Amino acid sequence: MTLPRTARTGPPPVMEARRWIAGLSFPSDRPLLNVSQAAPVEPPPLPLRTEMARLVTEVPEAHLYGPVLGLPALRKEIAARWSTDYAGTVSASQVAVTAGCNEAFAAAMSCLADAGDEVLLPTPWYFNHAMWCEMEGLRIVPLPARDRLLPDPAEAASLITPRTRAIVLVSPNNPGGVEYPADLVRAFHDLARDRGIALVLDETYRDFDSRPTPPHDLFSEPDWDATLVQLYSFSKTYRLTGHRVGAMVASPARLAEAEKFLDTVTICAPQLGQHAALWGMRNLGQWRAGERAEILDRRAAMEEAFAALPGWTLMGSGAYFAYARHPFDLPSDIAAERLVTEAGVLMLPGTMFRPKDDPDGAREMRIAFANVDRAGIGDLRDRLAAARLT
Image (cartoon, rainbow, N blue to C red; front, side, top):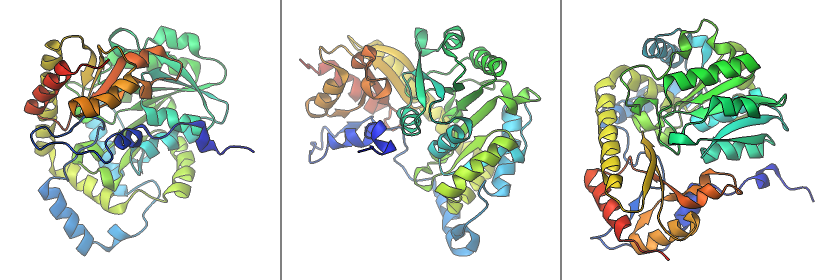
């Protein structure tokens, strides 16, 4: 009996981790510290919710199908904002709106590669990227992110074959948190261009990048869309996770192919979410800056905490994430589950972010700290310091 394509990959890691806390209760003076998922737990800010309520009652088209590639006004706004933010040139015809960034990635892979083709994914990788590639029958070629969790373009060059169709990068990185230097992103772009393949650059967390300058200059290239496919999400920036709004920025020709995928999967991204994202872009600049400042402060708190945490080594941090080596004499998947009951902490093991045969995952943990304030990060440090897992 032939197995379905979904059998090629494992269960969703976040859902698997949630089963570890099913049926458990935690005392009020020591509640669960959930650092497993990189998603806002608060609703959108009140001004945005007020606007969304108005949209629900006063804008009929918010309830209807819209253009497959997204609201024209939102596509135009994204293009204008990207042109300014990256000191480059992006047109509305190079922007598609998707039902979240995961759909943007799925659409990109569907129009770039066929079953049996190869895709380079840096390890540790974002597990949903790997899951989609596995279900699509693509061959994942692991590209180890070694020193400071940064992949090496020269090593990537040695892994490219005639079947390679794309290199995938995530910056700021999920799960590692690291911000890829602009010259590194440029080197990967040039490698992809010279080899005639695509560079898929997932910038879901770009609004929480600590740098005051553009994270790269790729959009200043006159023919950037011959190589670059950029992905983005509104979920984190405006707390619109349940409304599923993302973007794919690429050549009109690639978007025409992606349109076939989007039309058969969701027809269009949710209209209410698209209108909300547009309003947020136009009206929430100051609020967004405050959110960025708070995340950067929590990043600093994580780095301070881990500097004082015996046995742990912080490998990378930034945006929503810290990635660390743990000190326990147990594989990370077992240690992570034990931490739930023995420390009241839920985090994800490195085994969820690497190939099954990669031994490094057993020594690593991902900590999604964005929903934990400074006091909570101090509590996390204390609980991990006191944990004795054998």
